Image (tube, rainbow, N blue to C red):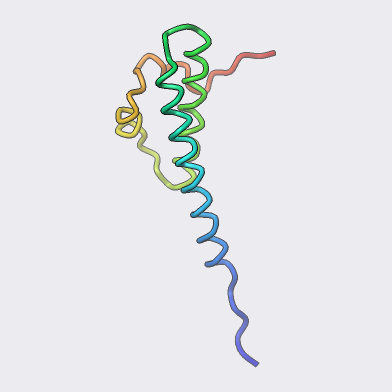
Length: 89
């Protein structure tokens, strides 16, 4: 009888693949939000939320320095003060 196969490496590989796919989706959503940003409160909130989501997905992949990535997408600095701030209903 052989030694049992450890399923964890295959599971972790699948999870990393899903995280990478999620990063691509979050990046596309961020691009759309940057393109739609016109400085109104509504577009500011939408962009801040897209940045927040993008940062969280990056962090699941172990990427914690977001500055260069956000610069690449052209996220205005003033948006960063709204990232993670949500209105109460």
